[in-house]
Image (cartoon, rainbow, N blue to C red; front, side, top):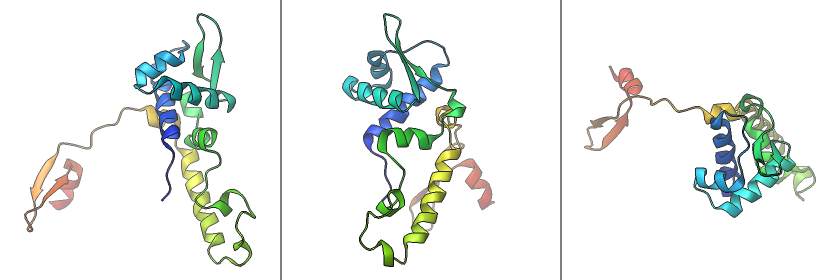
Length: 163
């Protein structure tokens, strides 16, 4: 299963919060932890990693704190994941050639590399601005009872398809 770590998930939450703030003000680690309801030590660790990667700017002093280094629409998700996790890779050989003893005779190495390329390209197209946008509801919940008596959740858009 392809999964990002909890730390990366929290890092993206912090970045999305900064993107939503829409101000030029710096935000300190304690305040970001309170606003996102995440543990302060974890937020501090995340902020340091994101600053080292050039995604955040850190300012010292009484009015110091953290702010985005670029606008939210200029920060792709793949950069945030890479800053917190390392390179995006489905398998070891897609991250680092030579990591697997079976690499030279592996029949699925090339397909995995194509899949990894597609995942990487998709993550490059999604930006922090996309993540920070409020989600529009798909429509009202419409419970339907199927022939087997089980309820099914259909939004208004899916309900149209049944007409």
